[in-house]
Image (cartoon, rainbow, N blue to C red):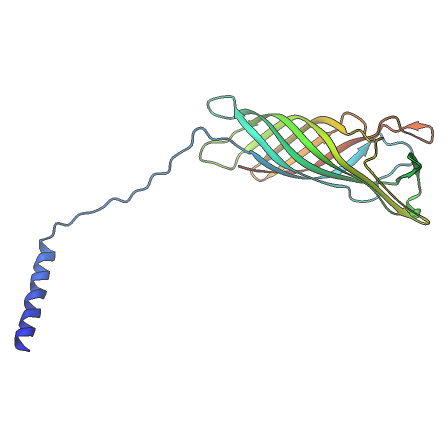
Length: 235
């Protein structure tokens, strides 16, 4: 036991001296973040909006909240060294509905249009699904290290309707019409998105009418669309 204790004591002392004799070094663990000077901004988008009808004939009224949603991808292509100016081309999908009192029904392949009183209508809407192709010119005061910046994006959007449905229910009737050939499948118009950081106001105005060659009460149906809402961008 004495020899064992003596051996442990010698090992402890030897370890202590060895630790003292070791050179002391300091390791610098500084990390560097690489700045991407060739960044691209706002390549994914999601929008929500309120849909308005313009150029409506006498008696046609919107009678509820007409909503819309859109989402897609835009290829950001900077034009200058600071990357504050750019153009973007993309593709996306969108949905829009319009709640109003213009009743559409179909009999023997013929569409009939009638303006009814709101009191006689419990449900009335036209909804459409589109493929969108936007192209826009962009200005922003972004930097490679900041994701909070002002932006003004303006452009032109072409939409192609891949599905549409109108549904109207009221006292003594219930109509549902899909893929109405009287609707213009091709829609187009200018738009703008303005904002800072997360919150961006957007507006779109359709240049061509929703319907083609349709008359209601001897008045040509020239309704157009105006969409107002918010746009959210994702890198």
